Length: 135
Image (tube, rainbow, N blue to C red; front, side):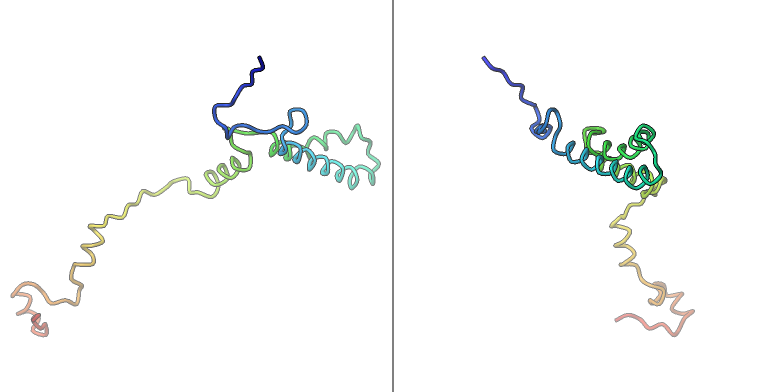
């Protein structure tokens, strides 16, 4: 009898096109191959550098497409991980200020009388005869 392992989470399944390569892997390898060819065409041939001496440069050029195609830190695509790292370490402040908005305080500020309002005590009314009582 034929048995097939079924992944527990269907979202973790990736279809394979060629060998063990997914479409994402194939696209990133194609992009890396184009980068290597352009590196050889614009740097290697005009300067008469042999392929043997160009291999370290090809490896340096292939690192970025390889990261985007094959590396999945914490089970997420590399571009999502890179975005999270950039936001948390560069964009977001390192020291976050704790600030809450208390609706009671906001309400009290709206209800409190302003500086131009009439004083509450009789003593203040005697000291400031220009105040008029509220009707």
